[in-house]
Amino acid sequence: MGNRAIAEIQFADYIFPAFDQIVNEAAKFRYRSGNEFNCGGLTIRSPYGAVGHGGHYHSQSPEAFFCHVPGLKVVIPRSPREAKGLLLASIRDPNPVIFFEPKWLYRLSVEEVPEGDYMLPLSQAEVIRKGSDITLIGWGAQLAVLEQACEDASKDGISCELIDLRTLIPWDKETVEASVSKTGKLLISHEAPITGGFGAEIAASIAER
Figure: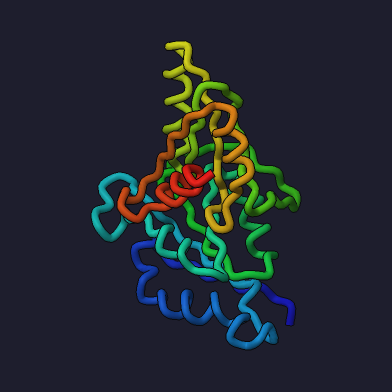
């Protein structure tokens, strides 16, 4: 009793045979049992995204599929330090969490990580860089791309505000809305296909405001 379950799926491309168990069982167990039982304490780790010459079985970004499911949380870190803090928070969360790990970071990211126990809050975006002209939003490995874009834009006198969403579901609308209210412009970048991508949900939500 009291133990936490951590499952690892070797690549996110292989997560689909477990789709029914994740979507119709783990995510809905609390509701189906009238809040008597739940699948909290279940964290599913899985590498995702493009890297090298992975091809169609090692390059997919399926996060949007799971963002459609009430009862799940979807978390994606951008760095080793973020990964540890967010993973520990995910493991201790009372809801099932899918923790996608950008494969690109496995090979390219080097960072000092505190040895002690620490957690980073879920559903709380981080403003990495303050700016006034445009808001840039991303998650996972795309943050490195966006950071370079901010540097390039600054050479042309454009001030970019950069936000790491960190948790896609439930996402931090307040932080994003406050930033876009200030800058008046929004750019969203992710690895997944445009059609049905989670960026479309963010764009629609901000447009409705």
